[in-house]
Image (cartoon, rainbow over all chains, first blue to last red; front, side, top):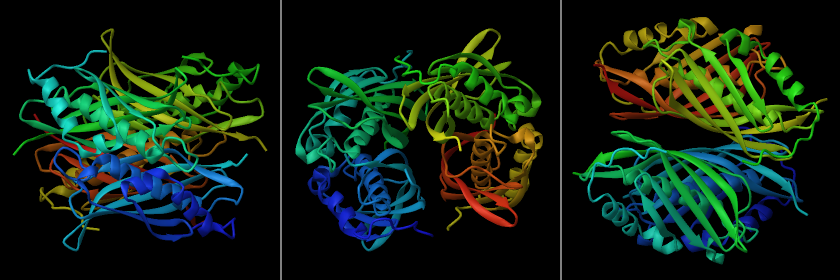
Length: 146
Length: 146
Length: 146
Length: 146
């Protein structure tokens, strides 16, 4: 998959700083596992604090992973003086999020000057086996920093 | 808006129990403000732990509110021996979530036997003023409890 | 609903011209019923050429109504030297489209400088009765005409 | 990609019959190019009757391809006595649909007993070159035939 043009030579540092500056990531325990131009992997270990009514990962955690893996992936392709914001996304929850860890992979499919579109996969890891439990698709906007 | 047929005489107790059983709600500080058949209001006070990179409410928190307000609203119309799960939803983030509190309203627009569809509005409250900051639309599935 | 600022004094003529220039509208028989700043109504009479396998209106016709009612509604708020394009939308089909006519209403909920978000309702009319059969939500982009 | 269990030995005949019975497909000139369990390719040649205001393929045609390629792909995995209906889908339009032909590929990613989820890609073909112009994601419901 063509990742799009790199416009900021410090793209990795900049994308990591955005991730670090998000209080929600540390609070939920979401880790930035891997980052390449147009591609990002996030993961979060299970805790009861992240659960829905049956004790599995809550859909809101899956949605946060979809939202933010796409946002950071889009962020790797922004210009140096821009910020990246989620404009919209959609998630289909395919199966309950059962396991020790959720892992989200985001791949930019359409890098743009102002709008970038990405696709996301969320996997649940249990006993060393990965199961696709949610898929997403979203639009991210680059906005000039004032 | 016609809310749909009530199928469980204990609908309110049952829907509140689902909300209470979700570890994520307490962890994020999300409160169940109001519940009627087919209509639910959730709210969450601001904390830095809920922030994105600019310090505002993270899109993941808005998405969690969209997801779960719709799920609990759909849950008010389920049968007694069923659980309710999010099948999918979509969110458009209209403005940054700036303020003391986010409030989400979910309204069922199509109650069904197995699938129920709802629309959601998320408002940011700041200095006593409400601003619409996200809208959503989602599908919730009723599944028989084993 | 605040419709957003009018930026083109000839907004109605311009939006009607966009609609007229779309070959697909005439081919499907879609009519522009009503147009106000940020609000548009489209309608299409039933023909077997618009059907799915059970003989009802095809979901593709509902989706075209969602797409284009939102696009024309967003178009009423664009600047004179801009075009309007659909960036993305989502549709939930609530019921089969059974009847003599489909009617779509689009309401802008967030007018912007470059991105505008709208919500759409699609009704089926049968024997003088209106039934909500689909709902949608979409993002429209304003692009400068070259 | 695991295509899901085949439940109807006459799956191909049944899925082709659904496609043939849709008046909209013939009217728009959409052809069923290829069909496998859980995977379908549709295509439509360009005509001015399918255009938006700039003369390119209308987003409604892309959306119809997304909707129906996913529906037919889901239909290959239904039981013999079931029909398949679109519950919802989402489309991102990545680029204008410029060219001689649009081609849509749908891949089931989660086959289910009552709900099946698919991902869709829409390509524009121009001068022998394929460009990804839209992506989609949708949910299809199996309903028992009465």
